[in-house]
View (cartoon, one colour):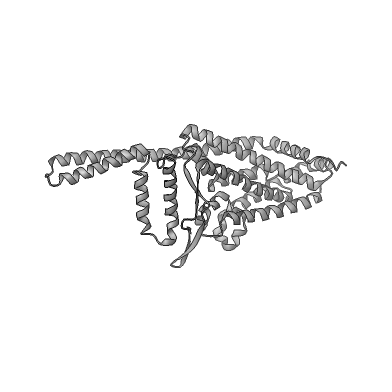
Amino acid sequence: MDNRIPFGALFINEWIKIWNRKRRLAIWATLVIVLIMVALAWQSQRQNFNSQQQQVAGLTQEISSLRQAMSAAPKKVRPSMRMQIQQLEQQLNSLKQNGGAIPSDSAQISSLKSSLSQEPSFQRGSTLEQIAVIKYDQAHGILFNSGGDGGWRLVGQAFGSSAAIIYALLTVGLVGDSVAGEREQGTIAFLFLHTGSRPKAYLAKMAAAIAMVWSVVAAGATATLLLGGLALGWGNPLGGQAVAVKVGEAALSNTHEVFPAVQVFHIIPQWSYDVLAVVLTMASLALVTSVLVAISRLFKSPTVSVIIGIVVVLSGMLVRLAGAVGMVDPMAYYPLLADFNGQLAQQNNSIANSLINGALVFALWALVATVYGAETFGKIEP
């Protein structure tokens, strides 16, 4: 029995096995996911466009009515009516120019600043964040809302929000039965026969599973950008996005709510946000994969292994019901970018949701799963 079989050879062998068994699922599922994301964004864009057209029509009608009324109005009230018409015309022109319902950047900032005086100090973080993003866009010559839901922004939405859970579910389908499937088919005996180090074979299997998942994510991100750009426009890759948002907890009556901390955030361009979203998704799915492969080692039935994997992936949705105990579940922090921009903390009303906490929980589970899998893989009876 050769103990010197290179790890690279084992890795390539395992990757080919996954590809041969799962390539149709990987290709078709990726295409379906991308098409659904683009279709939903297109629908949203159409609704926004129709809303804008209705506002344009309403303003045009109001201006026309005021002009007709002004011709028959007393001379004393005509100046005020003329001023009102000018204001409506400015709003109409800005609406047509900026492609959104917001009159202008300056008007938006003015409106947000005026709302600050009506908000408690602990609730001002979100408003200040919006102001900072608009000022960032102004500094880079970007009109408010000019990015829209184009290809660039769509990538960040797909991988930086809870929508990324669909890639975790796809991961279950790709690698959730990686060990159990071989046990059921009897091919694991062949693997043991041709490798001298069973822990090394397990690590090669896990690395190949991670590589396959990463390939799917990279393909999905590229397809989302290209198809989104062709269908919706490319958007602006320099548009501002807030990350590194810290949150805090405030008592409201008998409840507690989590709010973005005041002026604790960082603005980066959209393309950086998209890259960060994809990288953090890959990191998350690498750790999820290590857990799924370890779960697959526990069962002889691929069906049971996949079902348990789905339950694990969806368990993060129950974190509110589990309370503080639920925060040890890595899926409570998925996706990691949503932790980095404070989104998950606000959704779960828990300041424990953060990028650092999520990364530590993920890493701990991955370490335990990897050690367990590698140590017990050799004890499987062929």
